[in-house]
Image (cartoon, rainbow over all chains, first blue to last red; front, side):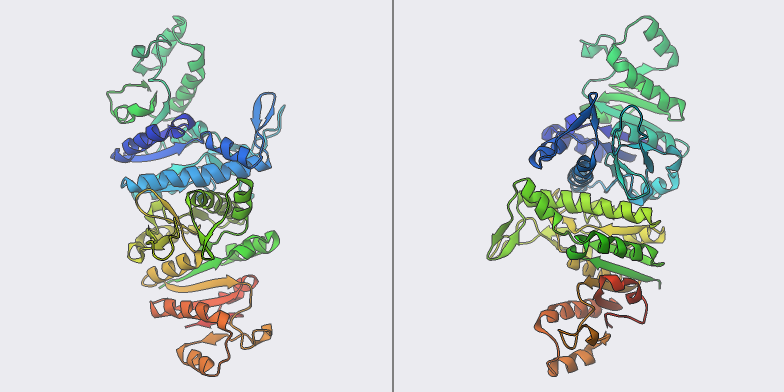
Length: 262
Length: 262
């Protein structure tokens, strides 16, 4: 099976022009099958403010109302996605910018109204992700660039977390590829000492994780990320990595700078 | 050779929710290989006004400055394009929303500065349109939905007229498909009497055109459209049709309601 890198890049890097351009250069130069999933960044909030769209919160949780779904469809699906595509094309990377609505690549449903109505937020219908559609693109050396948007199949675009899209894709494609799912974030990896970047743990498997937990060596903040990583591993993804955006290329080798879960 | 319909829909229909939805239903139901090219509509101007972006004119010609290219990338490439895709998907039409930057489908160059600097406007490099990329999509029953945007291959998105995209595509794909290029507009077709919708001329070939011209039976306003149609015919496109959006399905048959050029 071919290796497939599914790489998620978040808003804080996207907001930093120089760091983001450098990240895209590294991504473009990676000679392998690959998919980029991007978050949004502050630009949507900024454009929303210019348009008089107010962020709407209930119990501290952001709600995607009608104005907000149009805003993110436009900013993430248009401005951010197409600028990434144009940049990657200039670096000879044959990028194709997509949302989950395009070719029905990532079907979803509006999150059911529970204690909170989150509005136009999409929960991915994982069983609806059809690997052959992705293979068609990947086998023809196209590089999908995914905006954090899905649709409900009834004409409604939905806002969906980029981390969740990346892990759902990784799981769906794990029968067809040896997937390494890489979450790029602002630290070098999982640290033994949260205040010391030199204490990156380079490999965590379930035995090591149990040990680290019983030794109480992990910061609380990292635990949900680790649980996510193991959820992907448990569902067929070969490797999950958490690392720093600027270490992307090294983190695509076996000699990683970040934290590899396997 | 298979027939391929390349259908261009303009802003005035897009702005009319009910008419547009009805047009999309007809488009979705068309059982053939097909590509939709859409214009923008007034929504970009409206959102631009909310954001404080002023339309910039020189000698009566609209200029695409930095703020405007971001605006149209966001509105045409994001909001309008993805809403069309989500709508078509809900109608069981496997739409995939694209710009000319995606997969480098429509390479262009920034229009050279002459008497006027039009800004970020793209002139299509027709020789760069690679039919096999389009065939890959069409042969897998995907339906490309094109926003009126191209790119310069150096990281810059460019604003490009939807009519021009439609005709450049029709010409480029005319070796691989029997292309019928359909321009949907606000009249029923070319009229012998511009004030009488019942006087549609259903077929014009070069001989008939010469006759109509010598008889001075055509309104001045329609001449550029006719010249465009013949330019496509002269470059290998099998048939070009000018007709009303609501007549789309009949205009996809041989018994047309609009004006067919061949």
